[in-house]
Length: 452
Image 1 (tube, rainbow, N blue to C red):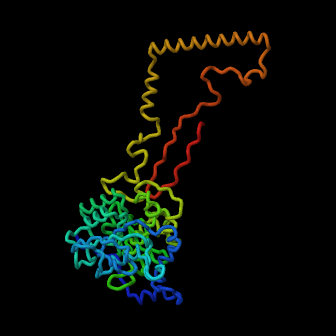
Image 2 (cartoon, rainbow, N blue to C red):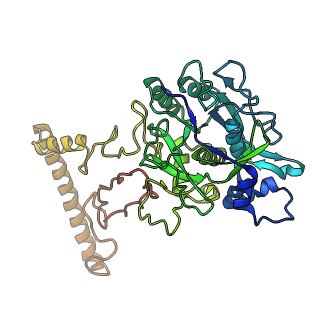
Image 3 (tube, one colour):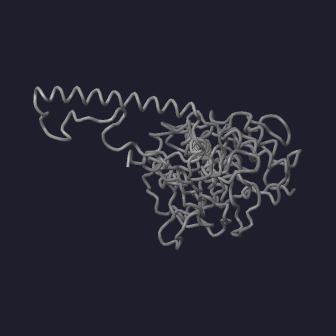
C-alpha cells in the first residue's frame, strides 16, 4: 500500500490573505478571526448558542496534533503515536493534523476566546492519532490505518476525521471500517485534490461520509475529486487555521472540508445524542444546499453531493430521524442497508395480503363444521327463537291494553336481534408502511382513516 498523502495544499499567508481578505475591516479586533470566512458563512455565533460539541470526542487520524497551541490547549487528549510510540499531542513538523484540529475544535484565545482560530465545535475534544507524517517521509510501523481506526473507536471517538488518501485498501482496513460502523461511529473522509474521479481510500469505502470542497461562493473547487461517493461539500478554499511549526497558515483542500463536516457532526451529536451516526449524516444532507446557477437539477450530484453544509439549519430544523444508516452505504457484514424496505427486511410478510396465519384460519373455517358445532348452533338458534316468541306474545298482550308504541316503526327502542349493533362494522386495516430510499426520508405517512 502506498503511503498516505495529505489532502491540503499550503499557501503563502500574505499572498492568500491579499487575494481574499483585502477588504477586511481595519477596525477588526483580530485579523486571524476575521480571516475565517467559513465562520461568517455558517453564522457561528448563533450556532454557539445552540451547541458547542460539548462531550463529543473527535478522533483525528493524521500526523499528530500540537496540543499546546493556544487555540487548542485543553481540547487535545493524549492520543497515540503509531509511528514511534507514545502520545500524539505534540508538535508535528507538517502542521496538517493541527490544522484539522483547529477547524474542528479550536477555541481561540484572549478575552472570551475572541482572538485566534475558532472551530465549529469549540467544546469538543480531539483524540490525536499519529499514523504518518502525510508526506511519505515517515510511515506507521504497520502501513495501514486499520489499527489507528480501531484505537479511535475503542477510546470513545464518536466521529473520526480522515483527511488523507491512499491508492488501495486491504481487508484489514475494510474490517476496521465495519467495526467503527457497528459501534455507531461516524467516519468522515476527504475526497481528494486531483479534480478527478480517482477518489482512493477511505473516500471510496462503504460506511464513510465523503466530502468535497467549495469556495466562499459555494461553488465546487476545481481540484475537488468527485463521484457518486461524495455526499457533502464544505469550505476548502483559502482556509485559515492553526499550525504546529508556525502559529497560523492558509491552505486549500478537501482536508479542510472534511474537518468542517466533522465539526458540524460533533455539534449534532452533542445536541441530539440519541441519533445514530447515519441519522447525523441525514441531518447534514437534508439541510445541505446546492447553489443556484450550478446547473445541478438532482441530488446527490457527483460534484456537490447533496450540497454544502449548513450547520445552523441542521441543528434547528424539524427533520425526521430517518433510517439508522441514513444516506450512508453500508459495509458488508454490518446492519441492514438503508435501502431495505419493510417488504424486504426481516420480519416482513413482503406483500399486501393479510398475514398467512389469518389466511390459514379462514381456510379451515370454510372447510366444514363438526357435528358438535352444528348441534350447538342449532340449540342456540332454538333458544333465541323461543325468547323472541315470548317477547312478541308479551308485547302483544301489553299493546292490547295500552295501544301501539309511539313513533311508529324504527323509533327509539325498536327491536334489534341479539348481538346486532347500529351503524357499520369497523373495516379491516390493510394499510402498510411505504418503502424508504437513501436520501428520501419524508415524514411518516398520515394514519389511515378509521372505519370506511
